[in-house]
Length: 496
Image (cartoon, rainbow, N blue to C red):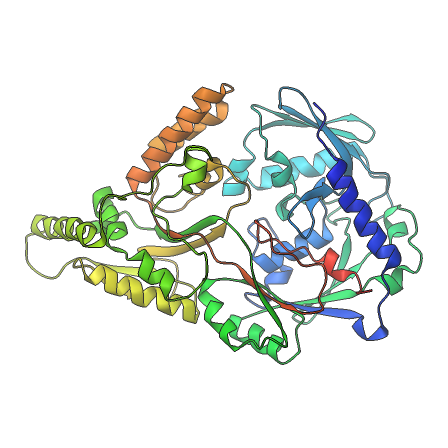
């Protein structure tokens, strides 16, 4: 079965047309982008990357495929591909061209690099997402095949992740080159002939460098308001209140329509948290509607489920939210009874359980902590805020889904990667689902894994994540999308 690649070819052709036709003024030679995080994030190595580290990795080391600014998969080192009828083999034809050092771009080198990247991801949630890959091999001089143990409809989205960028002799093949200038990552588009590609006329006049910095949410917004930044990326709920200071003449606040996990991960299995029923008590106590109302984000909806209902039951048969037949007062009554039972089991003397929670710094996190402290106090649980993540009983988990299936959500809590409370029974059901080639059996096993993980109460969901950006009114190459992913190369084109 051939993959319909026409939309991807059109996207690539549109990008080339923009390069050929776009000309800017000398004053827009650099675009200043700020990612919220720590100053050293753009220069990270390894496979556990911050958002700024992911931006740099994707800009400097293409994979077989990549994402465009709208979150669509487009050709990168591979210019076309097919998928076999059984969905268990993806065959990629590499583009004509070279690596950065001028050596030929071959299937042997690409397959070797991809195998190494997949191997390095073992033990991470993304590594679990790639567990269906059985073999990566070269078929001819420029043809790479990926064989799977079972069909993986979202494999292309996985291969487009920054962590799957291919290296040759320790270097990626662009499309941008990195130079460090103190805390600034200067990223410059590489001229096509340096990669063995055709010359684009007046290349230097049609592209510009990007200065990428990473700093706190407050400082990022200050720079934007002062005209010192053109874009601010990777805003989250923790820093969302800072956007109140953004003036409408400077630019716009953009929200990505993302799904994912936003809630409390149970990091400790000791004391009160040892019993799944007690962990459920905490989830029952939270007034999600009140929490969401504090931020005033239109369309932001609460959830009580690990997996979004539309994915858990399918778009035509979504499952109901947990405790949909109980109002908040009833939920808290059940929760308070469990806290009282725990106290009685401890001898009945003294105060109730005392827990600590870690949340990232920011005024949004202050709001969340205040709400949680009040909610937990209503059932007899005292909550304090941990200064560091290590050792906290609970920690905020705020991650965007990389592909739209239940497996992504379940993999986040696998005992081999979660480093927190988990369910070996759910993991076993999920492992069977991965191995199954029968769609009905696979769906049933996934439903069982979700049920077991839900009953283990290792995660307390609040809502979908929030991802916001600040975008100057005349900026190009940015588009809100379902993955919250904003590659730098499209931004490097000069405005016409």
